[in-house]
Length: 198
Image 1 (cartoon, rainbow, N blue to C red):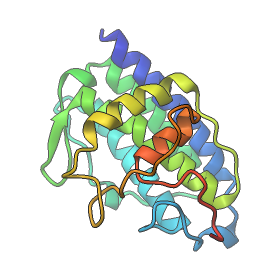
Image 2: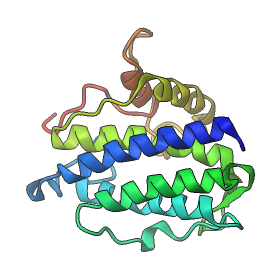
Image 3: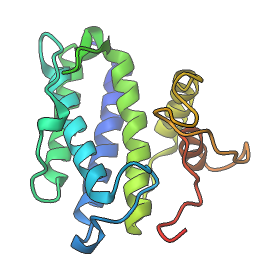
């Protein structure tokens, strides 16, 4: 068993459980509000995180590594139970060898399972922050997974993927000794000082 991947999967489940609590805390009057992920409202981003978390969980568990189409997965209620279930599925899938095989997405793209897992941890720490910031909730991931995601994101966010008009906005400057969460979201193209009314 890949103990490093198992540890990352457990960290991902912990992040998803925290994200589920944020989803439960979203009020009905907040669903059309903006988020730091500028292309998404709160409702849009909730659909995105539920769909992709579910798809990753099923993909890691599939013997062929095939994930379903995330856009076909509907949010049920707040989406919190789906996200918690996805965390459990990710851990089970990685324990079953999901990090050692390719993860194949519905659009035909494929990536090594270990890379997909690290990407999932990074994505949900940032999207948890997005939703918490947008809805006035707390978001306090553990430092160690944040530092791991900072290292991973720094390698992944090449000029091909980051900048104006690209999947990730330009990096935001923060102090080298800023908190790990601020450094991660800034690296991912978010302003740590973002607020809904700004």
